[in-house]
Image (cartoon, one colour):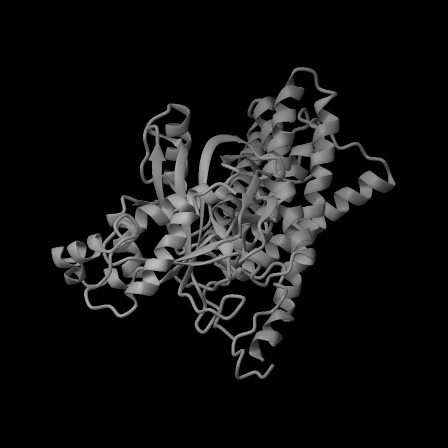
Length: 176
Length: 317
């Protein structure tokens, strides 16, 4: 069969993750919103956790935000003095982390591909570390420990790695 | 060739890696979630619901996507695909004409364009289904053909609730694309009848269950559109082998394999269906109920046979 008679043979397979169609006017998909909002929620819960440690807010607030924030390894009865760092350094650190998360959350919502890839790499490392400690050393992952944190990491990764989110982040790439 | 280079770029390789890794991680999460559900007492019910949600809406779709990419070939085989890559509703209709012609013909035939899927429309179809309220422009879930979501979607609500409806999706064929067998058509369409809302067998998601006999719905669409002046109908008999199968939601489907071709190019100019045309056609045997034509059309006899063919389709086999 000559190529002339069959001008447009389609490939018999499709690429796994890459978006199907690039469309610069594409609407922001739910997956992108979910990814961005989850990262922003982590920023907020981090801020609440930091504030609750620094200013002695109720322990339930601290443990709830600790779950979402991923830093619930520190017992809720510890205060800022037990951590061994000054309150300024602690607040500065928390503010920096929070700011970075906010920036990434907003970049994700805007559809930045670089932010998407960086957040996915961080989530992947975090998930892989949790898996190794669970598999090798038998660390239990329960609701009381790090299940919520892990779930958030995996949900962020699922959302951002989806075809919709990839298509949105690459919507302005030039066609080949 | 740029296409090939792009496929193997680092970014796309990374995308593929994260896609699969996230799927595996989600399986692990579902396992952890389920094992917790048995340990935390009554809160376990919430965790069990979370487990179902996780499984149905995140884990299984991702797994289906990965696996179907591997083993479902992406060439045209007369079936649409769901967003997870599963084989979806059968392609059971073809159209000749431009988008405007289809829009005009469908509007005249009493079909209503579906709202695009979005936050608002999704919420509204859920609430109106639960409250059994009418939502005539309810959105239609995306199905894929040629790697693209449908270009047009139409529906007819039944019994004043979005739970039951006739619906049909249209895809524009790529330029120069020919049907297997070599015929050229401009659009392909897949019409099925949503008979109820239920739990999908394959994906465990809440979705519309479709009526198994997709030929009835196909013939309903053909019949309704063929009434519009200027529309002609031709049928490719046994385009596909008659088959029984399941769609992406796990519903049975059967078809005789015929592919009607609706020619809506005659709808284009409103002058084409002035009363003269109707009268002349109504006198031609076999035409009256099936379609009308443009006056002076040399193909009238051919079309008469085609229309007869369309009439046969509803007969039991």
